[in-house]
Amino acid sequence: MQPRERFIAALERRPLTGRVPHFELVFFLTMEAFGKVHPSHRNYSQWGQMEEKERELHRLDMADIYIATAERFEHSAIFIHPNPDTVEETIRLIDILREKTGDRYFLMRHGDATFSIPDGKEMFAFAERLADDPEGLKREAQQKVDAAIRRAEVYARHGGLDGFALCADYCFNSGPFLSPRHFAEFITPYLAQLTAAYRDMGFYVIKHTDGNIMPIIDQLVATKPHALHSLDPQAGVDIAEVKRRYGDQVCLIGNVNCALLDTGAPEEIAESVRYALRNGMPGGGYIFSTSNCIYTGMPLKSYEFMLEIWRREGVYA
Amino acid sequence: MSQPNLELLFTAIVDGDAKRAAAVAQAAVAAGVDPQTMLTEYMIPAMDEVGARFEANECFVPELLISARAMKAAMEVIRPLLLGRAVEPAGRVVIATVQGDLHDIGKNLVATMLEGGGFQIVDVGVDVSPDKLVEAVQVHQPQIVALSALLTTTMPSMKRMIDRLVQEGLRQRVKVMVGGAPVTQDFAEEIGADGYSDNAAGAVTLARRFVGVAA
Image (cartoon, rainbow over all chains, first blue to last red; front, side):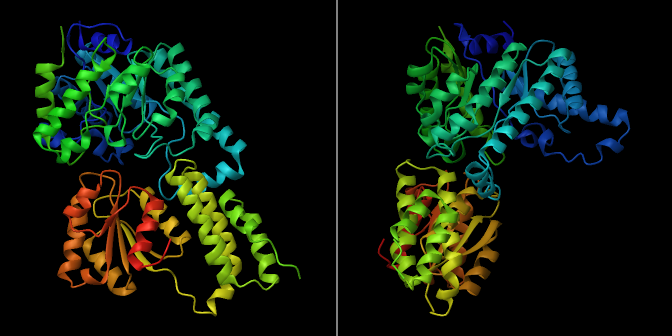
């Protein structure tokens, strides 16, 4: 089986033999690993001014970085971050990746359209709208979902893209930004619509959010994503409990503690990796990953250490 | 004029009803109620109640912010009366997100809750260098410095901030509290901070303890 097929099997919670699939939402350490600036860190303000042949060279260079990352770290999936982030450039990048790798990798891009936690400047205005203009907020939520579905229809017609990662963050370490009641009103119906539309088009859906999801996890699972990503142990999310309660409904991705990769001792990293594997793998429906991504500033050797354990112990009989 | 029911001021703030909070405050002012009494016995306790509910997961960030808005609406009514009376804040806090970190949600929440708790806030912003922090401490003479970091990669900046306060001879003048998603009590102790809270309401309790004000 190609890595893509194994990734899809895990998303569909089918049993696997061999190594449990792995990927990361983002691997930012491309300068250290490959001597290349990560595509998301590039400033293409003069993109429109470039000759087409120069744009194409940049696209090829960015595609090569995604492929090199997948090959070196044995990712089964590539999460593209097109830069510039347009539908046209997404399609061009997909085509290049498919041309270079065929169907070897599962390809996904951002696809969320629901309200995430606003930043510190916007959160006051958001809270005021929630209290003063709830119907206006719902209209905006619907418009965002409708626009995302229209974009997805273009990708579906073109082909090559396998799925979407929905990366709106909903939760802090302590719990959700919105109360479960507000979440049910302002997020869940729109997330369910979006997920259903993506599924109807044949796409796979991975719902990511940081933080303590437990107060809203019933709602998240009820929107029927193929997978839940992050399962953040820093926020107290226990993959064993999530697996026990929802393992028959949704694939689980993540749970290796990012903070430990950053600052923990090797034995602490090892324990986090082993806990995720031990509790995520049984019965299938698990994709090995950190609880966020390989972010800027993380020691590469910690990620490589995490993978060493996965290679030895993340194997189905 | 009959004495207004000040419990309504308390409940308006807890409920996040800014219009009602302002209206009750105006009626109380018109009836000659001492604004200091309104502030210390009804308004700040209302925000404390919201903070307690927040800590108990009975209310969430948007409700907390809407209560803070109601608190501000009532404050607008009584502020002119307080100005002439030299009413001192519970304390002055310089708050910042540390160098290298652009996240401001936690910082802003803590600032809002501290303000609701009667503290004066000097918000230095995000990605704040040790130099900028030192300057803010020298200029504003706070009793408390509050530092926030969301990333494990920026947590070491907290120690650099504290070390710099030591170098400048300012450390003994201020209490330092730290917080943020990856920060722990152990880390706070390790870097020499005076206190840690994992949430905005707890930060108010901590700040009150620092300045010797009863909760």
